[in-house]
Image 1 (tube, rainbow, N blue to C red):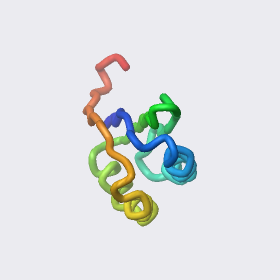
Image 2 (tube, rainbow, N blue to C red):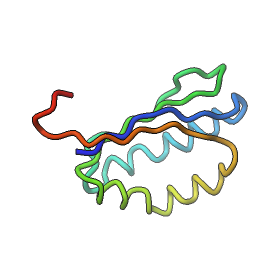
Image 3 (cartoon, helix red, strand yellow):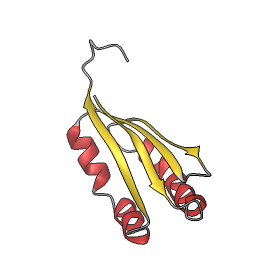
Length: 97
Protein backbone atom coordinates (compact mmCIF):
# COMPACT_ATOMS: atom_id res chain seq x y z
CA UNK A 1 0.00 0.00 0.00
CA UNK A 2 1.08 3.56 -0.70
CA UNK A 3 0.41 6.10 2.06
CA UNK A 4 0.59 9.81 1.35
CA UNK A 5 0.74 12.21 4.28
CA UNK A 6 1.56 15.85 4.48
CA UNK A 7 0.70 19.46 4.89
CA UNK A 8 -0.58 22.03 2.43
CA UNK A 9 0.37 25.63 3.13
CA UNK A 10 -1.64 28.59 1.84
CA UNK A 11 -2.57 32.12 2.77
CA UNK A 12 -5.23 32.12 5.53
CA UNK A 13 -7.51 34.08 3.19
CA UNK A 14 -7.21 31.36 0.51
CA UNK A 15 -7.65 28.47 2.95
CA UNK A 16 -11.50 28.36 2.92
CA UNK A 17 -11.72 28.14 -0.88
CA UNK A 18 -8.85 25.68 -1.20
CA UNK A 19 -10.19 23.48 1.59
CA UNK A 20 -13.68 23.49 0.07
CA UNK A 21 -12.27 22.34 -3.28
CA UNK A 22 -10.20 19.63 -1.59
CA UNK A 23 -13.29 18.46 0.30
CA UNK A 24 -15.16 18.20 -3.01
CA UNK A 25 -12.49 15.78 -4.21
CA UNK A 26 -12.77 13.44 -1.21
CA UNK A 27 -15.83 11.37 -2.14
CA UNK A 28 -14.92 10.96 -5.82
CA UNK A 29 -11.35 10.05 -4.83
CA UNK A 30 -12.56 7.48 -2.31
CA UNK A 31 -14.55 5.77 -5.06
CA UNK A 32 -11.53 5.46 -7.36
CA UNK A 33 -10.12 2.01 -7.93
CA UNK A 34 -7.28 1.45 -5.48
CA UNK A 35 -8.16 4.13 -2.94
CA UNK A 36 -8.22 2.77 0.61
CA UNK A 37 -8.66 6.13 2.38
CA UNK A 38 -8.63 9.82 1.47
CA UNK A 39 -8.93 12.61 4.04
CA UNK A 40 -8.26 16.34 4.11
CA UNK A 41 -8.49 18.50 7.20
CA UNK A 42 -7.69 21.92 8.60
CA UNK A 43 -4.63 21.76 10.82
CA UNK A 44 -4.25 25.49 11.59
CA UNK A 45 -6.64 27.96 9.96
CA UNK A 46 -4.83 31.02 11.34
CA UNK A 47 -1.57 29.93 9.71
CA UNK A 48 -3.21 28.54 6.55
CA UNK A 49 -2.19 24.91 7.09
CA UNK A 50 -4.17 21.91 5.83
CA UNK A 51 -3.36 18.26 6.27
CA UNK A 52 -3.71 15.42 3.81
CA UNK A 53 -3.82 11.66 4.36
CA UNK A 54 -4.33 9.22 1.52
CA UNK A 55 -3.96 5.47 1.06
CA UNK A 56 -3.64 3.74 -2.31
CA UNK A 57 -3.35 0.08 -3.26
CA UNK A 58 -0.19 0.75 -5.27
CA UNK A 59 1.73 3.45 -7.10
CA UNK A 60 -0.27 2.87 -10.30
CA UNK A 61 -3.50 3.71 -8.46
CA UNK A 62 -1.95 6.88 -7.05
CA UNK A 63 -0.62 7.93 -10.47
CA UNK A 64 -4.06 7.34 -12.02
CA UNK A 65 -5.60 9.51 -9.30
CA UNK A 66 -3.09 12.31 -9.88
CA UNK A 67 -3.91 12.25 -13.62
CA UNK A 68 -7.63 12.87 -13.04
CA UNK A 69 -9.03 16.03 -14.69
CA UNK A 70 -10.37 17.28 -11.34
CA UNK A 71 -6.86 17.21 -9.87
CA UNK A 72 -5.44 19.09 -12.86
CA UNK A 73 -8.20 21.71 -12.56
CA UNK A 74 -7.55 22.19 -8.83
CA UNK A 75 -3.83 22.64 -9.47
CA UNK A 76 -4.50 25.13 -12.27
CA UNK A 77 -7.10 27.09 -10.30
CA UNK A 78 -4.81 27.45 -7.28
CA UNK A 79 -1.51 27.72 -9.15
CA UNK A 80 0.96 29.71 -7.05
CA UNK A 81 -1.46 29.94 -4.12
CA UNK A 82 -0.18 27.00 -2.09
CA UNK A 83 2.83 24.84 -1.40
CA UNK A 84 3.06 21.46 0.22
CA UNK A 85 5.31 19.14 2.12
CA UNK A 86 4.20 15.60 1.34
CA UNK A 87 5.71 12.22 2.14
CA UNK A 88 4.95 9.05 0.19
CA UNK A 89 5.53 5.77 2.00
CA UNK A 90 5.24 2.22 0.79
CA UNK A 91 3.75 0.11 3.56
CA UNK A 92 3.80 -3.67 3.41
CA UNK A 93 1.01 -5.74 4.86
CA UNK A 94 3.36 -6.92 7.61
CA UNK A 95 4.20 -3.41 8.85
CA UNK A 96 2.07 -2.03 11.68
CA UNK A 97 0.10 1.07 10.78
